[in-house]
Structures are given as structure tokens and as C-alpha cells.
Image: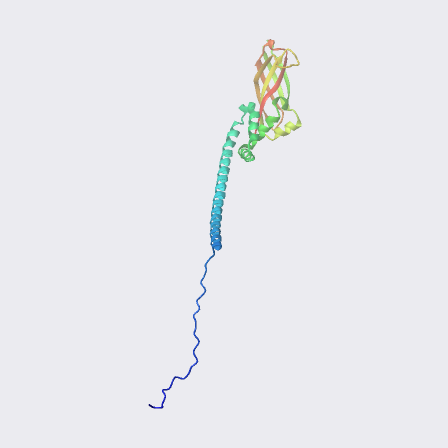
Length: 237
């Protein structure tokens, strides 16, 4: 046997064993966070929906208001000519009604009426607060013919006051309708014994005095006293 020994590997320092470390496992969202997230999403959706509804509601309300405004304007536009058409000399007995109708209108409707016929608005207001009997003064002279069957009268009509004259000056002309009444008494309380309506008409210009003559049949039974009055009047532009 040989003394030669089989060489043994040189002693080496063992290398450290490397242990692979695992990445920490993600636990994900907790139950609380998940619930909170769901609630947040629901809230966002609900808020968005409510906002959308609010916008739609606001638009619907605006559209409705616009439609109401349009209908109101159309109504006012139709009411104006209808009201104006009623203000005529033949309807002076309806002045109170016409004035009340106008007075109850909205501001917009009144403006529409003024735009359509301001002169008639002014006329109604004048007639409403100045009745025919007290708005004018009359100086009259009447004479019977020899047969005592015909009466001839000459009449001057003037505004009853400077204030009334100023109001009438705003109109080009004013149509006057006269009447005459008779009674046995000079001072009449109540209804006279006899009244003749529409005995004459006259046209006053700018509130100036106007004269008119008229003749009518007469019966001595009517009475020995008479008075001529303005029964109605109507101002024209």
C-alpha cells in the first residue's frame, strides 16, 4: 500500500444558506373600508341623481313660468282691444262698469290697454269722476210761439269750472247730448213732471263754450217751469 494518501478536499467554510423571504400577503380592504366605499358610491350616485332631478325640475319650472308669462301676455293683448271697443258714446251709461274692469286689471294689462287706446282710458276716467249734470253750466232762453204749442230755445253750454275746462282741453272735441224737463214747481224734488230726452246735441271744442238752438213741440200741461241740462257727454281725441 502506498503511503500516499488520497488528498482530501481542502476544508472550506460552508456558505451561508440563503432563505427566501416571502412578500407579505396583502390583506385587501377591511370590511369597514368596503362598507364605507359602497356607501360613498351610493351617496355619489344619489347626489348625482338628485342634482340631475333638481336641474330638470328647475328647467321644468322655468319652462312653466315662461309659458304662463306668454299666456298672460296673450290674454292681456286680447283684453286690450276688447275693452277699448266698448268705450263709445253709446256706452256712457256703462262707465262705472268699464272703469271697474280696467281698475281690476293687472299692471301689465293696464299698460296693454293704454298702448291700445290711451285716449279712451282718459275718457273713462273723466266720465267716471265728473257726471254730466255737474260738469257743465247752461245758460238758456226758451220762448213759446203764439199758439203756445211750440217752444224754441237758445242754449249756451260751458264747463262748470276752470278745472273741468282744463280737463276738457285735453280732448279735441266733446259731444254733448241735452235734455229739457218741465214742472209746475220751480224747485223740483224727485222726478219732474215731464222730460224730453235727446232734445239737442252739440260739439264742444277744447273745452270752449258752445251754443245750440232747438225747437220742440210743447204742451201746457207739462208745467210752466223748465230747465235744460247736459244728459251725457263723451270726449274725443
